Image 1 (tube, rainbow, N blue to C red):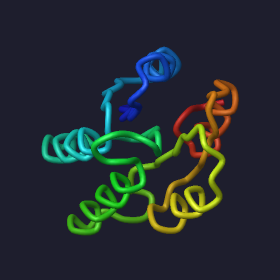
Image 2: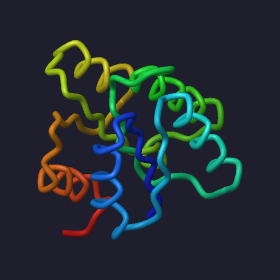
Image 3: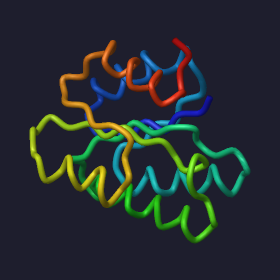
Image 4: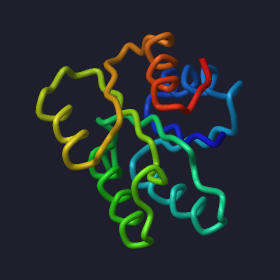
Amino acid sequence: MKFLLVEDDYVSAMVLVNVMSPYGECRMAANGREAVTAFKEALNMGKPFDAAIMDIMMPVMDGQEALREIRKIEAERGIGGLNMLKVIMLTCVEDYDSVMASFKDGQAEAFLNKPLEVDELKAHLEKLGILKS
């Protein structure tokens, strides 16, 4: 498995790495622009990410915009359906509009609030077939 972990807060990023690294290769990005660049690089190398866990509120480019860019790249390359990147969005703000945009515009598979509950994250990853239960 290959994971793209997108988080601007260092402590939260380290939590994600500690949780996800036993399950596969982890690539960190500190903002949405870095995430889009990493996503393109992985596709170009023929080694795409299996899943992304992405914060919504970040500097430079937020998670919503990054997810829209990723979906645009997938559409341009004919990547669809089950081959699309599976994305779990994270935020510390309970904002209904952000949640709906994550699902509607970006086709995110799940949305989790911070502080991150590790068991809840693992449960979502199992539901998506990314982790085995």
